[in-house]
Amino acid sequence: MKQPFGRLIKGEPDKTMPELVMLVRRHHPSRITAIGDVVSREALKAGIPVNLSIIDQKTMRKPAATISLKDRKIYYVRNPAGVITLESWDAIKKAMKERDTVILVDGEEDLLALPCIEESPDGAIVLYGQPNEGLVAIDIEPEVRREASLIIRRMTREETDEV
Image (tube, rainbow, N blue to C red; front, side):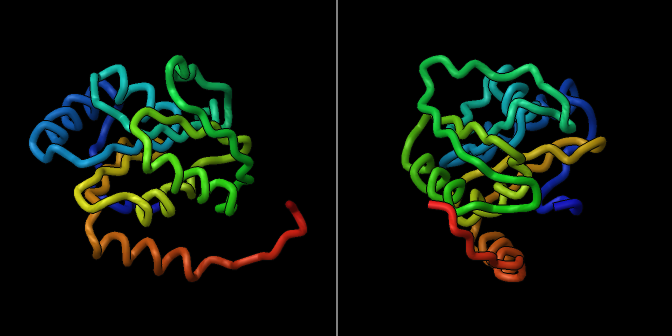
């Protein structure tokens, strides 16, 4: 995910959030998923109706100011760096059927954008931060879902003994 998967909105949150607000008003997405602590916090602060936030309470691997978890359904998952666990994918599937949800990750959330793209309905937007560049907004449509699926299929699949 080093290359932006969608539209890159360059800059710091004070620049990216007003552009994102205009994008949301223009497109009326069916659902909004924010991946990452900064993206989730700043989107909510800007009044963007985020349905699902996926956070690990870190920014650039350092503790981060987190979003309010009050009155939100929370799923707790383990997801090591460089991996997409079945546990995480199952939580994403469940959370996509709900409105005000947080997935709190023990590990790293970066690659979870891929299952979010696959599980989001058409017309949704998936957001994630592009380190030192800005914010990526992905408009979900069948072609984007196919691209995500191809990337996932190329990833190494490992069996584990975990229950």
